[in-house]
Image (cartoon, rainbow, N blue to C red; front, side):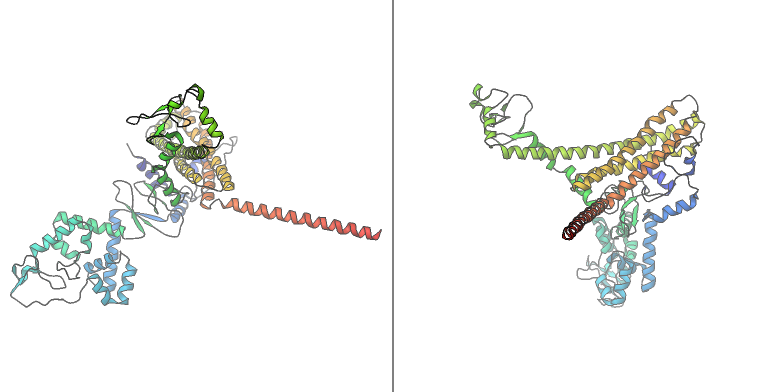
Length: 555
């Protein structure tokens, strides 16, 4: 069975779209309507598909890179540096690793001061030690004598035998990615060990590790690239700056925010998402619950939750202290004169004197805070659950229902794409709606909150209508014994609801990304209008007064 990511990715690859809200057209097959059918806001346009797809692709601000793409880009950069600077590819690799794979940085630094760069990176032009022609040389690691042809040196000239080189390189590779910046075994020597040495002395297994580190460094050291965070995915995303939309979709179909690598959360910013995730996982809400629903034992101070109607509380062993839930005094001081088991006159009188005001106020604040958080969290989680269920329903529709519906209604499956489009719109809208509840939790401004809740309510209402239509009304045609004349009406209705819901959510997304600026604009215009009316009223009063005074003088 296909995963959620495979399911959504297949559609992305077919449609060429990466964003429901970046603009776009719709399939002409969905626009067939009869003259007497109601208009659900869906307008038919004669747009060439190739032009439409090209328009969508021009708006994509990222590229998904597979392993072969990364290797090709990496080798292109190495070849470019090697050709421009007239150095070997091994030396070009050392330079690029040192400057975090920035070709422009390499060129700037090299042409500014080649000698300084060579020294800093470890690309030496001449040996730092001299060796005599012929005779034996002593390995700098094992100190055994070897013939000159049995010894291998870097540009620095320090001699080491093949066995020691093999052990040195193998050890550093197994120590991790630090092998990419490996230097000469001589402790004080700055000479860098290039790829040619790894090719010569590393085993097949060690070479695989080395080139894996080498490949990963190209992404991890590059500010414009990141790995896809999906488990098991080895793709990377190259992001193009100059846009505020950081949501990207890998070819494995994992959608995430390129900026913070959390799940895609447009239109909510990364800071709000981070706050919300921390709050959901933090202990603060547990403490709020404890504060709102428990009281500390007067003796051992452990929090106690009241789970029975009686006010007589007994702390758990080893404390076993008995006290009154209301006034927290010893139960031995209670009886009929204090109100019995279900009331406490001591508490009531003390409360009237203000002795419990601060504690009650603190508990009430904690309770209100907890209730407010619960309100937003439940709706956030519910939309996430609904989204997951919608993904399952889409998968079931694609695997079973569309084929069955095609047979019953005598309609090719290619003309049933409007159902898939509706489910995909629902899935995307559930994601957006989920994050709007995190946005609403941190929204302080009262006027903006009213506008936000209005937009959120309109979008949610439209989504529920669409979800009900595709979930409930479709079943009627799936259970029918033959083709129905009402199916075309259903097609028109569902297509129209999909379009309308998309519009609602476009408005919601734009408003949130603009910081609900329309509220400020409306308030400014209202204030200006009020001020203008006030000045006119004052001016009119003065005019009438002067007119009357003139008449009085005239009389």
